[in-house]
Image (cartoon, rainbow, N blue to C red; front, side, top):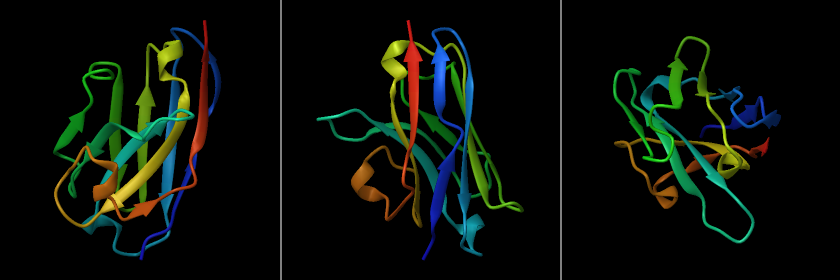
Length: 123
């Protein structure tokens, strides 16, 4: 079992940057694929980015490719999401997720979730 806690959300102006962080309480963090999703009211959680066990393999949604960067530190049991060039369409609750298998863009594939952190981008 893995417990995840996100932090780093807030209010930022369009064009600005934020760095989200996810802290895991489990001691087998390095064996999990990690990902970030985001959700707005009335919609399903959308895939943002994923990172493999070693941190070498990464995957990004087309909407954030070139602007967001996912990274992990297995020694600290953390995964980060650096978000640059933010726009109002990035406004959402951002969730950290984990699974034991390969990277996936489907929220139903992830067994473990954090509580979410709000990101609001003003125009």
